[in-house]
Image 1 (cartoon, rainbow, N blue to C red):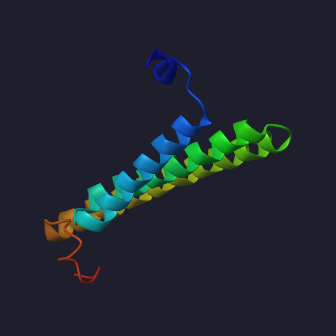
Image 2: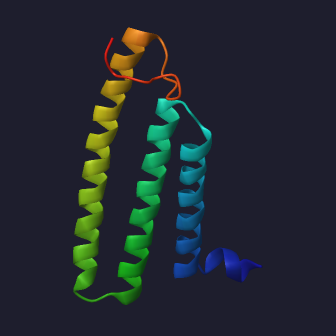
Image 3: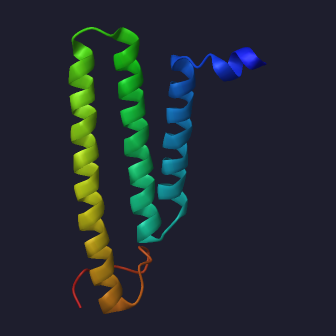
Length: 109
């Protein structure tokens, strides 16, 4: 039992990334709140980054730096997406007093 807990291999990271991705997909499919949708998309992006870094460490070599750079770019894009998405959600909430995506049919008043 201690062998499983203390010898963390690449498979553990890949399983964790798969679980995070499935939680994100579940959040996107089940929830209708715009904030939950944004958080679920962030979970899926982080799971993809974890998979990318795990494979980069597994293969090593010169391509590992490229994978780390790509993961940093994805993190930067995700931060920009979160800030723009949150600004849109706040603007919609001020106008409609609701952020339920099923009830939002148009973006005009």
